[in-house]
Length: 67
Image (tube, rainbow, N blue to C red; front, side):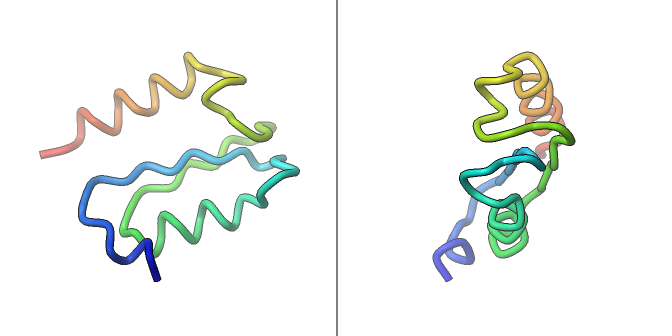
């Protein structure tokens, strides 16, 4: 799988209520890419655009944990 070829830190943020792409797709991407998965309860498609503060905080926390 393509995701298994990733060799970089990976954070996947997906809305539980996404009607365009089911959250299990994001979950699988994170799993196969060896990354971290965050499921946003009540979130829809494009959680980065719908709640940019929440998204930016998640990215900041993720980056802070990197070696």
